[in-house]
Length: 277
Length: 126
Figure (cartoon, rainbow over the protein chains, first blue to last red):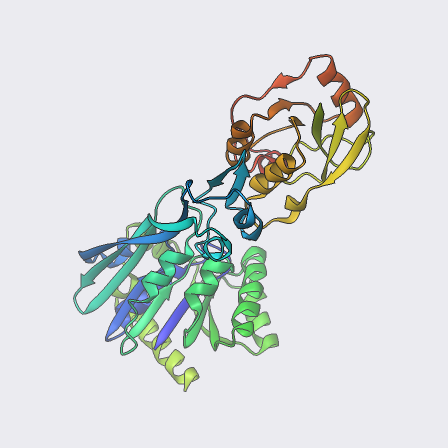
């Protein structure tokens, strides 16, 4: 079973939920898809056992063959090429590796070369297998790392995908193919606003989902009211507490800090399986 | 000589748009006659690479000089390679910008400014 944890707004507790859920499940695999700032390994503390590079394809122009016709420049949807004084200039960081320039070139003057944009690391902690993607600083496109990371999914296991914030390409690519989405939110106008965007995304992608309310406070009913109105499963609530913040800030898991949290996350996993049927 | 001013409207009373990649349009002015024409900027709604696309549009229109607020690193690479002169101006009407250029009062830009300069200005970032 593949469970994606997303939120819309950043800082609501995706990683808190993901690492604890992965630790509470049997036969689990954890993937940190937040490749711009992966931090799940801080809590899971796996031993790194493998590393691989993530490479993308960028065009290279053979200047001897190039006719300077500008067809590649016109065809590029991402503006990654320009024709200056009879010479094609490429902008590798803008390039989405779609290969259109190769197809339209009448002189077959365009080839491809690999460019490394980040890495994937594998780690082990007991029976838990962990992977994280790391996008190099300065690289603007995260999706190729997420795609390569998702090839590590073992469908026989309980896979937790710790997704990036937002609701754009990197989130869409992360949650695609998931059996269930866990939306983590907080009872603030900002959290609520972005939650609604995340809800409309998972509804459009037709993925079953439920909500976990983090930083829950008495009298702040904005999320609870919304779940009732929209008939969304509210799977659990975590209180706004200094104790939890302290455990988290020290890089520790809630599930190792007492019986209550172990039960909470085991219960959460059980409820997801039950909802999914 | 044909010079381009990034503008937020389609006549000489329009204000200069300090963003090159995402300006509303370019006004192409003939420096001898002061005749002008509007060059649409197809990059204004580009999802990315707006500076590159706008710079290419200017080259295709055979512009020899550009007056704007900021030129990012990608657009700069293109304009520099093409030998297009780039000048910086404050936000005022295109006509005043042109007169200042003619009087030799505008600063020459000779290196790339920050990327996403328009966004930075709007957000008040340094």
